[in-house]
Length: 133
Image 1 (cartoon, rainbow, N blue to C red):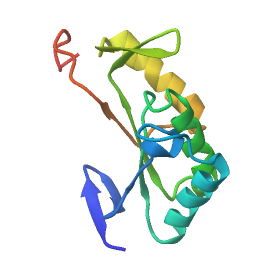
Image 2: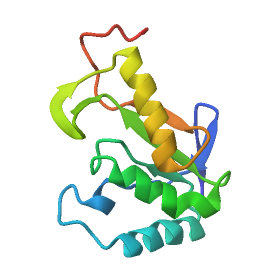
Image 3: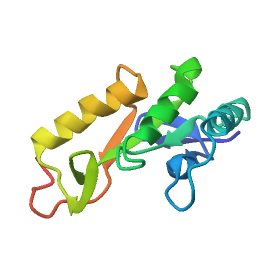
Image 4: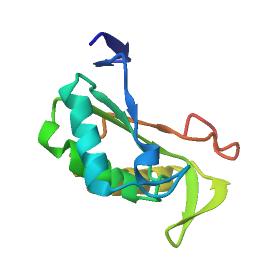
């Protein structure tokens, strides 16, 4: 598999977007089948996986974390922040207030079962928060 650089990260040229593994555009697929799919992707050389707290919400990061747990240090997981959540549901608004981003990062670490997030980026720009913050 060819590789690409994303900043200081080297990843497979083909990545796996995991959003629909817990629904999204369709009914929720079988969890065990999706875990097997992610692991089969690793076996075929895929090292870049993308998820977000909003997918599910939350359950997609849990699935990705479980699926990729045997491959710690071998794969790159990207996850995103930027959607406002209230009582575990998206409000449809964006937020990138620093205290929210910090909490999302802590929650994503726990759901993914990792000590650090390889690539953590903004899902949607919050026009109320200067990008420098």
